[in-house]
Amino acid sequence: MRLALAQLDCVVGDLEGNRATILAGIAEARAAHADLVVFPELATSGYPPEDLLLRPGFVRAARESVEEIAAATDGIVALVGTPWFDRDLANACAVCADGRVRGMYRKHFLPNYGVFDEHRYFAEGRELVVLRLGEASVGITICEDVWQPGPPATDLALAGAQLIVNLSASPFHVGKAEEREEMLVTRARDTSSYFAFCNLVGGQDELVFDGHSVVLDDAGEVVARAPGFEEHLLVVDVEPVAAIGRRLRDVRRRELDRSREHTPVVEEIELAVAPGQPDEVAGSVTAFASELEQMRAALELGLRDYVEKNGFAEVVVAVSGGIDSAVTAALCAEALGPERVHCVSMPSRYSSEATRSDARAVAESLGCAFREIRIDTIVGAFHEALAPEIEGGLAGLAAENLQARARGVLLMALSNTYGWLVVSTGNKSELAVGYSTLYGDMVGGFALLKDVFKTDVYRLAEHLNARAGRDVIPRSTIDRAPSAELRDDQRDSDSIPPYDVLDPVLEAYVEEDRSREELVAAFDPAVVDRAVALVDSAEYKRRQAPPGVKLRPKAFGRDRRTPITNRFRG
Image: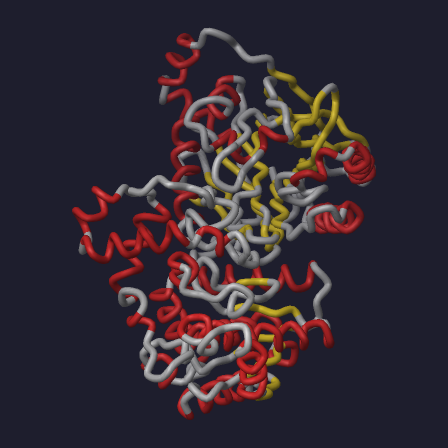
């Protein structure tokens, strides 16, 4: 069997555009003489469509779209992810062949954790679907179905499926691609089945889908793997009937069959395949990139898709001479091209000549437009206006934050004037402990480093320089002690613990939900108490932060949902 996996970047709600992309994938797969082409989960609607699924008109239009797609399937079988209403709404796979929809598989396991909310929208499927394509039997699953260690994958194998396909929209986090493939290896071995996993690729609001579609044989060996973070049609010849030999030798599945209390209903669909193929196609196996390279690719893909899918042409970044803004600007320039990135430096009387020079240097190094707008006059006008209202005049933290807010006003003025998207520069460490200014440095439409700890910002800076073969980010920016420069001789470490000490505590508390007792057993109790208090008190700020790329297993926003009004400590 010649198998094609169409790893696509779909746009939520763009039924017409997604349909055109799917039809192009069918045409490309047909030109490659594929018998079967597989598309990602909910490819017709984009993933996740969220409350669009509550609109009857959207559901009807999605059905019409998949029927138009099916009309183009002469000579090829296409498995297309789509919402499908029949008595209730299902997250479904349409079996398209011979110019029509020949069958429908409905997803069994609906994830309702982390970023997923599928119980809100879909009814669970119960039946299995097995395709008979010549001598091969192909079982269908959707995403979460194969993350479960038993049915439906084991039931499909018992029903005779030698190849199990999985239509997926599996979001990325650091380490996810390797973790997911390890799971698929286990499923292939447990069921003595070939596995074909077709994943979505692209950015959707905070989520990034990494692709890395893969085909494995019945021993769990990788036969073909698509590259990550880009669209790709993965074509490979497989012999699913070879799984029969392993099953005859490994009879454990018979005991599993005998122990089942209920035998699921299996819908079998007989489909014709074209006889013979041209020269054999051995699948390409793209190696996984390093962790830092995957982080870079995910950040750039998430930014680029957010910008372009939402109709922005250019972006603006406030460059301060610090590491966060330099890394943000560098990622923007790579993702969009330097001609679409505007760097703005907004120094105050507390800004050093060194940071002012580095702000200009990073823009010039990247080839981005640069402008400098001093904020002293603006800040002075605010102080003057507030002097009659505040005895002794504005001072302390309020005076420091005023500078950040003046910068926010300037950025938004440029955004409104030129249509530039403001890309904010704060990182996860700062957001976690509230070391940021509402309506100041938090202002913007997209927070690129929102899920990147400060220590990882430094690692990314070194990676970007190594990748470029030169210091696109000035060495002085990397080596300088971090400072907001909102008062004389200010250092971040004056207000919060050093990042190399703080970040491991934040990871354990925010991402692993470890208790105070567990934390103090592993870290400095003073650092723990300070970090926990700051994290808990800053929830109201995080609710007002822009969306940003989800890069870690638990991100602020869609993943971590903590009440603002909350008295539990520890």
